[in-house]
Image 1 (cartoon, one colour):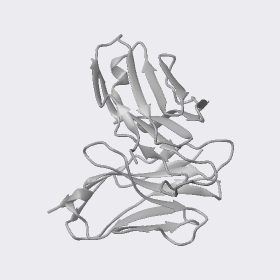
Image 2 (cartoon, rainbow over the protein chains, first blue to last red):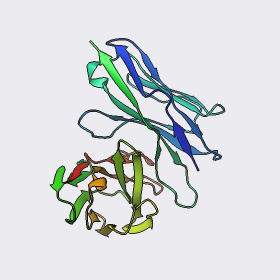
Image 3 (tube, chains in turn blue, orange):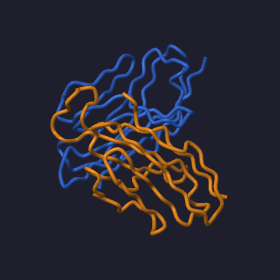
Length: 117
Length: 122
Protein backbone atom coordinates (compact mmCIF):
# COMPACT_ATOMS: atom_id res chain seq x y z
CA UNK A 1 0.00 0.00 0.00
CA UNK A 2 1.12 3.50 -0.74
CA UNK A 3 1.95 5.87 2.09
CA UNK A 4 2.56 9.60 2.07
CA UNK A 5 4.54 11.29 4.83
CA UNK A 6 4.68 14.97 5.62
CA UNK A 7 7.21 15.35 8.40
CA UNK A 8 6.51 18.99 9.20
CA UNK A 9 3.21 19.40 11.07
CA UNK A 10 3.60 23.18 11.21
CA UNK A 11 5.73 25.81 9.54
CA UNK A 12 5.86 29.56 9.38
CA UNK A 13 7.39 32.00 6.94
CA UNK A 14 7.71 35.74 6.69
CA UNK A 15 5.70 37.45 4.01
CA UNK A 16 7.65 37.70 0.71
CA UNK A 17 10.08 34.96 1.77
CA UNK A 18 10.41 31.47 0.34
CA UNK A 19 9.38 28.30 2.12
CA UNK A 20 9.68 24.61 1.24
CA UNK A 21 7.27 21.93 2.42
CA UNK A 22 8.49 18.35 2.46
CA UNK A 23 6.73 15.21 1.31
CA UNK A 24 7.97 11.67 0.91
CA UNK A 25 6.05 8.68 -0.31
CA UNK A 26 6.43 4.97 -0.57
CA UNK A 27 5.32 2.96 -3.57
CA UNK A 28 6.40 0.08 -5.74
CA UNK A 29 4.77 1.62 -8.80
CA UNK A 30 6.83 3.27 -11.51
CA UNK A 31 4.07 5.45 -12.92
CA UNK A 32 1.94 7.63 -10.71
CA UNK A 33 0.75 11.15 -10.03
CA UNK A 34 1.61 13.48 -7.19
CA UNK A 35 -0.38 16.48 -6.06
CA UNK A 36 -0.25 19.32 -3.60
CA UNK A 37 -3.59 20.55 -2.31
CA UNK A 38 -4.17 23.65 -0.22
CA UNK A 39 -6.89 23.87 2.41
CA UNK A 40 -7.44 27.41 3.74
CA UNK A 41 -9.57 28.07 6.82
CA UNK A 42 -12.65 27.90 4.60
CA UNK A 43 -11.95 24.14 4.37
CA UNK A 44 -12.10 24.12 0.58
CA UNK A 45 -9.58 21.72 -0.98
CA UNK A 46 -7.78 23.55 -3.76
CA UNK A 47 -5.36 21.98 -6.19
CA UNK A 48 -2.03 23.78 -6.12
CA UNK A 49 0.14 21.73 -8.45
CA UNK A 50 0.43 18.28 -9.97
CA UNK A 51 3.32 16.16 -11.24
CA UNK A 52 3.35 13.07 -13.43
CA UNK A 53 6.07 10.65 -12.35
CA UNK A 54 7.14 9.95 -15.93
CA UNK A 55 8.02 13.60 -16.46
CA UNK A 56 11.51 14.58 -15.39
CA UNK A 57 10.79 18.29 -15.50
CA UNK A 58 9.56 19.75 -12.25
CA UNK A 59 6.10 21.28 -12.39
CA UNK A 60 5.68 25.01 -11.87
CA UNK A 61 2.58 27.13 -11.31
CA UNK A 62 3.40 30.80 -10.84
CA UNK A 63 4.91 31.12 -7.34
CA UNK A 64 4.59 27.39 -6.67
CA UNK A 65 7.10 24.83 -7.83
CA UNK A 66 8.03 21.31 -6.89
CA UNK A 67 11.28 19.45 -6.47
CA UNK A 68 10.49 15.94 -7.60
CA UNK A 69 13.17 13.37 -6.81
CA UNK A 70 11.83 10.06 -8.08
CA UNK A 71 14.69 7.90 -6.85
CA UNK A 72 14.44 9.38 -3.38
CA UNK A 73 10.61 9.32 -3.52
CA UNK A 74 10.52 12.92 -2.51
CA UNK A 75 8.11 15.62 -3.67
CA UNK A 76 8.64 18.97 -1.97
CA UNK A 77 6.67 22.15 -2.60
CA UNK A 78 8.39 25.51 -2.80
CA UNK A 79 6.39 28.67 -2.35
CA UNK A 80 8.19 31.82 -3.46
CA UNK A 81 7.27 35.36 -2.45
CA UNK A 82 4.91 34.06 0.24
CA UNK A 83 1.66 35.95 0.62
CA UNK A 84 -0.77 36.17 3.51
CA UNK A 85 -3.30 34.26 1.42
CA UNK A 86 -0.95 31.29 1.35
CA UNK A 87 -1.76 30.60 5.01
CA UNK A 88 -3.40 27.18 4.93
CA UNK A 89 -3.00 23.47 5.47
CA UNK A 90 -1.08 21.87 2.63
CA UNK A 91 -1.62 18.23 1.74
CA UNK A 92 0.61 16.09 -0.39
CA UNK A 93 -1.24 13.32 -2.25
CA UNK A 94 -0.38 10.30 -4.37
CA UNK A 95 -2.34 8.43 -7.00
CA UNK A 96 -1.51 5.37 -9.02
CA UNK A 97 -1.26 5.90 -12.76
CA UNK A 98 -3.55 3.04 -13.63
CA UNK A 99 -3.90 -0.54 -12.65
CA UNK A 100 -6.82 -2.44 -11.23
CA UNK A 101 -8.96 0.65 -10.98
CA UNK A 102 -7.46 2.07 -7.84
CA UNK A 103 -7.87 5.75 -8.55
CA UNK A 104 -8.09 6.95 -5.00
CA UNK A 105 -5.84 9.63 -3.61
CA UNK A 106 -3.65 8.80 -0.64
CA UNK A 107 -3.05 11.91 1.45
CA UNK A 108 -0.38 12.90 3.90
CA UNK A 109 -1.34 14.29 7.30
CA UNK A 110 -0.76 17.84 6.16
CA UNK A 111 1.50 20.77 7.01
CA UNK A 112 0.00 23.87 8.55
CA UNK A 113 1.67 26.91 7.00
CA UNK A 114 1.39 30.34 8.56
CA UNK A 115 2.56 33.40 6.65
CA UNK A 116 3.59 36.15 9.05
CA UNK A 117 3.19 39.80 8.06
CA UNK B 1 -17.44 25.92 -15.44
CA UNK B 2 -19.15 25.37 -12.13
CA UNK B 3 -17.04 23.28 -9.81
CA UNK B 4 -18.19 20.39 -7.69
CA UNK B 5 -21.29 21.40 -5.78
CA UNK B 6 -22.16 20.01 -2.37
CA UNK B 7 -25.15 20.56 -0.15
CA UNK B 8 -25.79 21.32 2.56
CA UNK B 9 -22.64 23.21 3.56
CA UNK B 10 -23.39 22.72 7.23
CA UNK B 11 -25.57 20.16 8.96
CA UNK B 12 -26.34 19.84 12.65
CA UNK B 13 -28.41 16.89 13.71
CA UNK B 14 -29.14 14.75 16.69
CA UNK B 15 -27.87 11.25 17.25
CA UNK B 16 -30.10 8.68 15.63
CA UNK B 17 -31.33 10.92 12.85
CA UNK B 18 -30.83 10.23 9.16
CA UNK B 19 -28.41 12.51 7.32
CA UNK B 20 -28.20 12.87 3.55
CA UNK B 21 -25.32 14.66 1.88
CA UNK B 22 -25.53 15.61 -1.78
CA UNK B 23 -23.02 16.14 -4.53
CA UNK B 24 -23.09 17.34 -8.10
CA UNK B 25 -19.84 16.55 -9.92
CA UNK B 26 -18.27 18.62 -12.67
CA UNK B 27 -20.11 17.99 -15.91
CA UNK B 28 -18.42 15.34 -18.03
CA UNK B 29 -16.39 13.82 -15.23
CA UNK B 30 -16.64 10.05 -15.01
CA UNK B 31 -15.32 9.43 -11.51
CA UNK B 32 -16.82 10.59 -8.24
CA UNK B 33 -15.25 10.22 -4.82
CA UNK B 34 -16.53 10.69 -1.28
CA UNK B 35 -13.96 11.57 1.41
CA UNK B 36 -14.23 12.21 5.11
CA UNK B 37 -11.88 14.49 7.03
CA UNK B 38 -11.40 14.36 10.79
CA UNK B 39 -8.64 15.60 13.04
CA UNK B 40 -7.84 12.09 14.18
CA UNK B 41 -7.80 10.28 10.85
CA UNK B 42 -7.12 13.03 8.34
CA UNK B 43 -8.58 12.62 4.86
CA UNK B 44 -9.87 9.17 4.09
CA UNK B 45 -11.67 7.81 1.06
CA UNK B 46 -15.07 6.34 1.75
CA UNK B 47 -16.23 5.21 -1.68
CA UNK B 48 -15.83 6.03 -5.34
CA UNK B 49 -17.88 5.57 -8.48
CA UNK B 50 -17.02 5.18 -12.14
CA UNK B 51 -19.77 5.97 -14.62
CA UNK B 52 -22.29 5.85 -11.77
CA UNK B 53 -21.20 2.37 -10.64
CA UNK B 54 -19.63 1.92 -7.19
CA UNK B 55 -16.12 0.59 -7.64
CA UNK B 56 -14.61 0.52 -4.18
CA UNK B 57 -16.57 0.99 -0.98
CA UNK B 58 -14.00 -0.54 1.34
CA UNK B 59 -13.60 2.77 3.12
CA UNK B 60 -17.22 2.98 4.19
CA UNK B 61 -16.98 2.66 7.96
CA UNK B 62 -20.05 0.52 8.60
CA UNK B 63 -23.48 -0.40 7.41
CA UNK B 64 -24.90 2.86 8.64
CA UNK B 65 -23.24 4.51 5.66
CA UNK B 66 -24.56 4.15 2.13
CA UNK B 67 -23.90 5.98 -1.12
CA UNK B 68 -25.70 6.11 -4.42
CA UNK B 69 -25.17 7.67 -7.79
CA UNK B 70 -28.44 7.44 -9.73
CA UNK B 71 -27.08 9.44 -12.66
CA UNK B 72 -23.94 11.16 -13.88
CA UNK B 73 -24.80 14.46 -12.26
CA UNK B 74 -25.86 13.49 -8.77
CA UNK B 75 -24.68 11.42 -5.82
CA UNK B 76 -25.77 11.04 -2.22
CA UNK B 77 -24.08 9.84 0.92
CA UNK B 78 -26.50 8.76 3.60
CA UNK B 79 -25.87 8.02 7.27
CA UNK B 80 -28.65 6.22 9.10
CA UNK B 81 -28.68 6.33 12.06
CA UNK B 82 -26.11 9.05 12.70
CA UNK B 83 -23.77 8.99 15.70
CA UNK B 84 -21.59 11.69 17.29
CA UNK B 85 -18.44 10.02 15.96
CA UNK B 86 -19.69 10.69 12.43
CA UNK B 87 -19.03 14.39 12.97
CA UNK B 88 -16.57 15.44 10.28
CA UNK B 89 -16.21 17.34 7.05
CA UNK B 90 -17.38 15.27 4.09
CA UNK B 91 -15.93 16.07 0.70
CA UNK B 92 -17.06 15.05 -2.72
CA UNK B 93 -14.56 15.13 -5.58
CA UNK B 94 -14.79 14.35 -9.27
CA UNK B 95 -12.30 13.50 -11.95
CA UNK B 96 -12.03 12.73 -15.64
CA UNK B 97 -9.84 9.69 -16.08
CA UNK B 98 -10.81 8.21 -19.42
CA UNK B 99 -8.38 8.91 -22.24
CA UNK B 100 -8.83 12.25 -23.91
CA UNK B 101 -10.22 15.33 -22.26
CA UNK B 102 -12.61 16.99 -24.69
CA UNK B 103 -12.15 20.53 -23.49
CA UNK B 104 -8.66 20.38 -22.10
CA UNK B 105 -9.80 22.60 -19.27
CA UNK B 106 -9.71 19.80 -16.77
CA UNK B 107 -6.41 17.96 -16.77
CA UNK B 108 -6.84 14.25 -16.47
CA UNK B 109 -6.16 12.45 -13.24
CA UNK B 110 -6.79 15.52 -11.11
CA UNK B 111 -9.54 15.32 -8.55
CA UNK B 112 -11.48 18.50 -8.04
CA UNK B 113 -13.06 18.89 -4.65
CA UNK B 114 -16.32 20.44 -3.59
CA UNK B 115 -16.50 22.86 -0.66
CA UNK B 116 -17.40 20.09 1.77
CA UNK B 117 -20.25 19.52 4.17
CA UNK B 118 -19.49 20.11 7.83
CA UNK B 119 -21.54 17.61 9.80
CA UNK B 120 -22.08 17.82 13.54
CA UNK B 121 -23.99 15.06 15.25
CA UNK B 122 -25.04 15.93 18.78
